[in-house]
Image 1 (tube, one colour):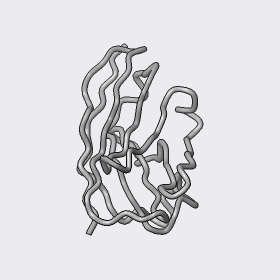
Image 2: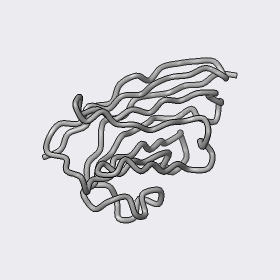
Image 3: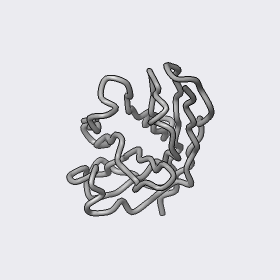
Amino acid sequence: QVQLVESGGGSVQAGGSLRLSCVVSGYIYSRYCLGWFRQAPGKEREGVAAIYAGSGSTYYVDSVKGRFTISQDMAKNTLYLQMYSLKPEDTAMYYCAADRRGCMGWAQQSPPFGYWGQGTQVTVSS
């Protein structure tokens, strides 16, 4: 069983930065895809970034490219999302997720990720 616990959310002004962390417990092997997703009030959940555990290949949605960086520290079993130049439209609940079927279709959540954290709130004020 895989469990994920996020932390690091908070409130910042536009242009600020935050780093989200996600501690992953349970067995994760190289075929896993680890991702960050977000959901704003009244909107559907969307993929933000993903990393393929085995190769370290990273993927981003266009709206965060150049501003967000996803990374993993396997020694600490931790997934990170470093966010720079935050905008009010980045305000959302952020979730980390894991799935053993790889990263194909990650942004569309197709197939859906099997394991999810409880979320951490990010609020960006203008």
